[in-house]
Image 1 (cartoon, helix red, strand yellow):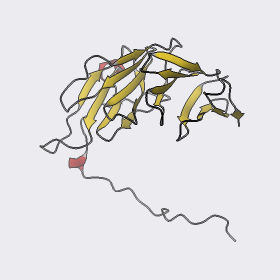
Image 2 (cartoon, helix red, strand yellow; image 1 turned 45 degrees about the vertical axis):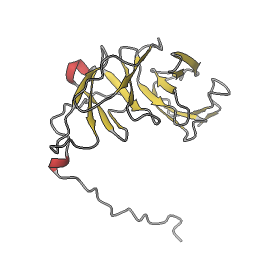
Image 3 (cartoon, helix red, strand yellow; image 1 turned 90 degrees about the vertical axis):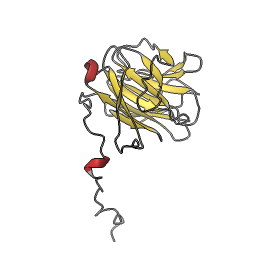
Image 4 (tube, one colour; image 1 turned 135 degrees about the vertical axis):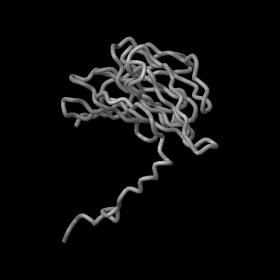
Length: 208
């Protein structure tokens, strides 16, 4: 007997919207970063762009404007390429970006045509080029950011690092919070997964 059930989605095909529902004319980034090139909240879509030497982010509203179009606002965020971005799960307008310029910045994203202006907060982890940034899913004000081999946990309300996790032996490729925020999982170029409990210890509690 087959131990695997046939998926009810095996013949599912994507429903691609019509061209008038596209956000067109954008110059999305194509560089090989470890982070995400696009993120969305309930109100906005933000994406990496090659404009401005890669230090800019494009932002559009999820809902179209009155004329049926999606105007894109370009924000000059960093002095070097934007490597990752993430919206706060508690605030649809709060966007975090990290960059090869070794900084993390938090931006208050506003309406369709309004520029973001100055960042709300600027963090300087001082650990070289930054690759990925991710808000904590359950605790407001906590943010994880990674460099090439390490992850730091920051309290953005105090602009201070709460924990610097043990360095990985090779390139850190990605990380993700458990849904309740109690654990952090990382993947590394050494082909191993590591599970961290940042509240208990800075070393991995499990390596697979």
